[in-house]
Image: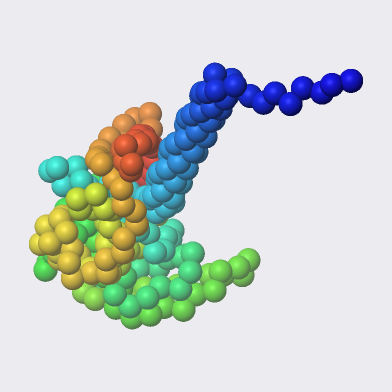
Length: 265
C-alpha cells in the first residue's frame, strides 16, 4: 500500500491563515470590549461609592442641626448649619420683662463653658450674630461648665449665663438647643471640602470666609453640585435637597438626596 506524502497547498495555507486572523481579530475585539465594559463598570461603581459616602455623611450631620440654622450661598455651592451639641428642657424662662443670670434645665449631657443656648430659633443669621448687649432676645451664653450625669435619678441643674438675660419667647415644649461652632460644605472646582471649627463671626459663606477653620477634602471628581433649602411648613419640617453629578473617564453619575430635619423649634 502506497501512502501519499502530499502536503498543504499554498491556497490551503492562505485560507487557514486568513481564518486564523479573522478568529484572532474577533477574539481580540471581544476581549477588548469586555475589558472596556469592566473598566467603565469599575469607574461607575467608584463614582457611586463616592457619592454615597458624601450624601450619607452629610445626611447624618444635617439631620441633627439646630432648627432653622441652615443656609446656602447665592451660587448654592456652599451649605452651612449649626450642629446641636446638647439639648435640654427647662423648668421656666425669664420672659420679658423678667430677667435672670441663670436658667434651670434638664440637659442630655454636661454643659460646657461658652456653649450658646437658643429658644425657638427662626433665623440662621441671628444664630451667628453677636449676643444683644441689652440681654434681650432668644439666645444666651453659658458662663461656666456645668456637670451633669444622665440617669433615672438625674435632677435639673442651674446654668449660669454670661449676662443678665430676658428671653423674648417661650417654647411650647419648654425645649432649648445648645451649639458652639458652625459646619459647612463647599464645592471648589471639582472637589468638595468640609469646614469646621471656624468662628460664628465668619465674614461670608464661601471658602475664603471659612478659611480660618479646619478644611478637609471629602470627595473629588464632582462635575456639579447644588444645595437647596425648603423651609418648614405646617405639614413637615425643613427639607434639604442635595444634588451631585460625579464624572470620571467619560462616566457620569447623578445623585439626588433629600434630608429631612428631625428637630423643630
